[in-house]
Length: 275
Image 1 (cartoon, rainbow, N blue to C red):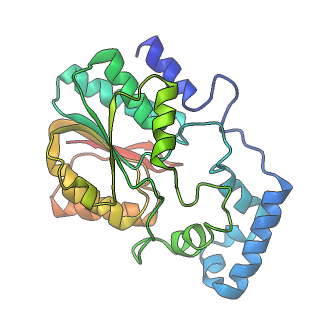
Image 2: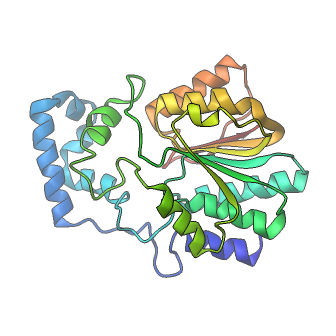
């Protein structure tokens, strides 16, 4: 890894100023969580029965604090996840695996910025495609968890100072790339899954999927996996989410994929496999 890529990996997480994983919860966060807990007791007590730890407002606040909108970071992905992206990108370059770098679901653009940096540093002939609706998450379905439906989605407006809805507009993402002088690298495709993939037919060397829910994960794999070159990598950011995990497991079973699934980070649910 070059000094440039190492520095870039730190800047997108704002590590050069402070440790972004060391987040202190506030009394306002605890009070807001307490209000939501009281509402859940009336509206959907099954949530608290299924996830008893949510009855503790301090524990609840610790869960949501990581997703604060005011955090001065361009990615919420942790160090292990960032290292995995770098390793996969450098591996396909080393093995001369043909194909684009593709990210589906970019939020603030941080991981895309990292991929763009790899392209500038090592192989400017490689293309980076980023697919996103830039309008936030779609509604979860019945394959997604009770928590995702009745807490994360249902209270996204209540917790409007957090990235519950993952909404970040296209212009803001472009501006983030400009801050690094990398705005000429990505090809940004705006649209909902799977329609945004209609005109894309290129080979893919690294496919990173960060779309949270079952249907979006499933439809991305159904439309793009066939384009991943042998020796390329698929990175899944949300395998700890019930719906995402089911989508990945169902798809791998559908195509009889027994390639080892590598656990990058158990805490955040990042996994990957080589095709």
